[in-house]
Structure formats: structure tokens, C-alpha cells
Amino acid sequence: MVFNYLGTSSVEYNWIMKSENYEDQQTVAEYLINNEHSEDAKLFAKEAIRALIAGGDVDFIDPLETYNFQSETTETLLFEQDYKNRMTNAEKLIFNNLTRFQQLDYLHSAYLAQEYALVYFGDSIHVQYNGKGDAYRHALWNAIGAAKLGTNLMKQLSDAHEVPNEGQTNNPLEEEMDLYNNNVGRNIGSHSSIMLMMKVKFAVDKGDTKYISPTYGNGNIIPGFSQIIPTNQ
Image 1 (cartoon, rainbow, N blue to C red):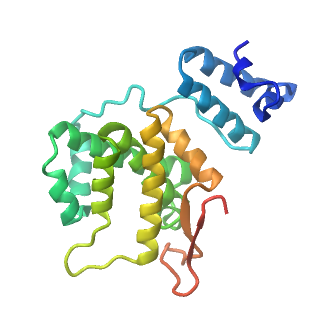
Image 2 (tube, rainbow, N blue to C red; image 1 turned 90 degrees about the vertical axis):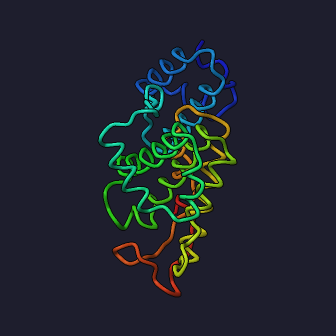
Image 3 (spheres, one colour; image 1 turned 60 degrees about the horizontal axis):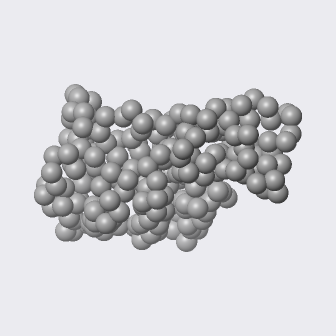
């Protein structure tokens, strides 16, 4: 049986024994059959079941499976110009010394993280700036980047992204949050390259990542009140 590996005493096994979960069971079973030789897929299935038990939504289609990281479409090139304008000088120094393929991997990681943060968390500045969408974006950016470029190079680039240019300063809370979520993402991407969009979503839902709360309606920090808290709160 496709679910045998779960173990007869596990939370997941108890879930598959309940008839009311039939449709979700079929979806998980189909995913496992299509990835029957992958231990990573089995681990993802366990995570997915736990997310379903908690009432979450799970997408079993991996957008990265057929994604072309080497594409240089008009949209990609426009994003590159926009992103370069947001790079710090320290970040540009590293970026400019990468091969073109590495640059594209890095840019696509940032682009996908930006887009999927909107897909999963909505286009609200309160969510996307210092909120849970912000946490997701940073973690996914680093997860994909670590899977494509390696953990060390991605750490160099994302750390450099937090280094302010001369005459500028970072908000300490925002920097702490971003560095923390970057590290969570790299850890995910260093162990796997499949289903990263959902694995990072699971991390956010479980509170493995962090965001800032409370904030003003525009996401700005409230001095003396805002603090960094887990994203499951």
C-alpha cells in the first residue's frame, strides 16, 4: 500500500484511516505514486498531511519542476533592472562577479519569491512589508537560491543585501527579521530542491519564520511596541 511507510502508530496513519479525508488521501496517494522512488517526496507527503490536519491548503504541483531559470524574457530583463536598483553596493560587487547563469539563478530566485509571496499572502503592504508575506519572500528567496547556487554563495549575496550603502542605515528589527528568515530558507533549500514553495509555506504556518508585530497599517514599525514574533502567532 502506498501509505505503508507512514507507520501504523503515526499521526499521518491515523489521518489516512478516517474516511472523511478520502479526497485528500487520493491526492496524497497520487503524488506518492508519481514520485515512488523519492525519499524526499515521502518526507514532503508527511509534511503535507500534517498541514492538512492543521486545516491548511497544500499544492502538490511543483512550479520549479519545469521552470526555466536561464530564460531572459522581456519580463525577466525588466525585473533585473528593477532588482539591480534595489541592490546594495556590497551585493552588486558579488553579483557582478558571477557567471551569467549564476546571475540568472539569483534573479529568478528573487522574482519567484516575490511572486509567490503575493500568491499565498495577498497584495497588502501590511502583509508584504514586515508581515508574514515578507517572511515568506525572504525564506523562499534563500531556499531557491541555496538550491541553485549553494548555501555559501547564497548566504554571501543575501547577507550583502542587508549591508546599507554609505550614509544609509537599516532598522535593527527589520534586519534581524530578514537575516533570520534568510537562514531558515537556506536551511530548507540546502536539504531539498523539490516543492520549495510549499515547504517554505509550511515553515511560515508552523512559526519557523518570524515577522514584526504590531505595525502601523503601512507596515512601518511602531517604536517601543513592535517586536519580532513567530509567524504562527
